[in-house]
Structure formats: structure tokens, C-alpha cells
Amino acid sequence: MTIFHALFFVAEIYAIALGVKYGCQYGGTLGGLAGAVVGATVGFAAGKLPLLGALCYARRKLAAQSTEQLRAQLRDGRDLAPNILLLELKHRGVDINPELPFVLDMLVSDSQLRRSCGWNALASAFPKLASEIRDYRVHDPVDESRKKVQPLRDRLPSSEHLKGH
Image 1 (cartoon, rainbow, N blue to C red):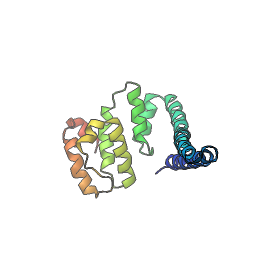
Image 2: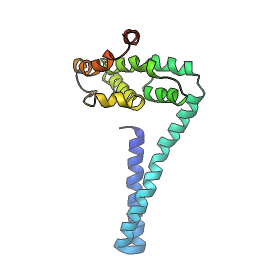
Image 3: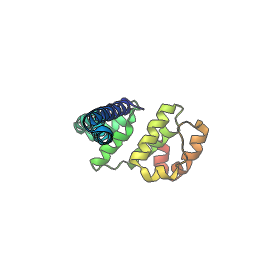
Image 4: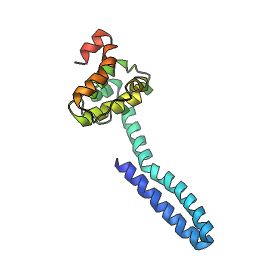
């Protein structure tokens, strides 16, 4: 759960409560129901605004970086959203397949947070591959993660496979 989930939840509940309150005041029970529907719609839209704003900010920030800078940022391993970097590269028409060994390495990291970031990267940038290991869980022991990821590694060309280690 992120701050954006919390903001969305609070906006949704607050808007529904206001809709019910004012709907009941001016239209009784039926007005309260209508107010709840209107409140839910308004709360949904308002709750998404912080996330939309953050995504627009991130998009502008990434658009200002060169392809080489994005690849360097991806590979330094400090970014907690490698999926966004990969999608930006993909959006630019850059072949992201050379980054696959790096993503697969993340999936078998000793760090659960790193595995989670790797899964998000695989699922968003390489969805067909992610669908091949649907039973992958970031909470599984590392040995089990390695077993589940190995079939994907085995299909990499040998030079890419070696780069990932």
C-alpha cells in the first residue's frame, strides 16, 4: 500500500459521506443514495489526482534524461521503480530486451524488496514472460524463486545469460 492508495481511500470515503449527508438533507433516503453515488464518483476522481500528478511529474523528469542516463539509472540498482524506467525506454522505441537479464537477477535477489521491484518490472515491461511464471511470489524463499525463474534464464542467448551473473 502506498500513500496514493491511502489518499484515494480517504477521498473516496469522505466524498461518499458528504454525498450521503447532503443527499439526505435535501432528498431524504433516495437523495442519500443519489448523494452516495455522486460522492463515490467525485471521490474516485479526486482520489486519483495525487497519483496522476506524481506520474506526470515523473514522466517530465524522465523525458529530460537521455537513454544512456535511464539505462545507467536502471542498472545502478538504487531505483525502486525500474518498471517505470523500462517503460520509458520502451516508449522511446528502445529495445529493452538487453535489460531482461538484469530484471531476472532482481527476481532472485536475497532482498525481498528487490524481488518485488523485479516482479513489477517483469510484469509491466515483459508481461508475456511474467505470465509464464504466474506462480512466482516475492515472499517465497530465494531458492524457490530461482527454480521458477530458471526456465526464463535458460531461454536467454548465452551471452545475455552470462551478463546477468
